[in-house]
Length: 384
Image (cartoon, rainbow, N blue to C red; front, side, top):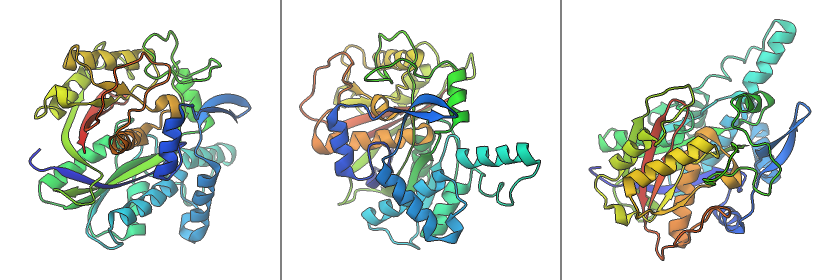
């Protein structure tokens, strides 16, 4: 990269909470935030955002008649975006770009409108405008009155990190100086859960830790869905208020054998990590926040890719999906959040059931991985 990119603020909503102190406290607890909830009469493991955060979402919905019909993915994006620009010192009407995506988009509304159509052969007037993919960034742009581009996209589970890639391109090209990026996901519906179960990747077994992400010895898939949204403010160059800096970016796509497959040694991750680290010594990378979705092949192939790139001198490895589930399009930015918190507190968050690792004294550089259906991997290197 020609110039460092500063992350000047980050705001999130997730099962961990929605403020930095609460989020860090929950990371330190070592307990899973996954529980069971009934969907169409069937109990399933999910990770829910806290009740007090749900109240904030509903208050936002009631605050403006235009927000009444919006999907929860949009409302969550509005909340975190408002907080992010406030913390960064940006104002409504400032010049900045927006790129916020989602893997599944307006899932809740789409299912509601489709059910109504099947029952009545008619649909509501707002069915189409409230379920388009562009809803998230366009409503955030309406709310923040930004003087700049607004972009939406869906690249499955690497959506949020692809938003960073896009923003870096705009910033490095001189076409923008500020960009708001991230992802939002509200996938906890009966139909979405049924889709994951049909793929035979969803957690079923009773356990203290239903999602066994980064358990390399597990014999059953254990992915669990969570809900959340996270955005970051990016600025070109060094900034006094920087939380961290983006030093390297990498991306690659695997050759697929199946719709959801990844190669045995995650060739896509090998390529994306090498690209992100091309100007960094491997020994300078202190930790990696893995994608590690809790599936047998997903976790093991990424681990093999890391071994291929780093050899015997592995950085510390972690993931947050055992605690908060897989938030699809928002997951990459929530992993960025974990990386920044570990650097700020100089404290490594271990996966409690994973094999013990040698803990380094300082955490100055962290690599974050994400990959989704389609084999589109992204790796982002952040530093203090």
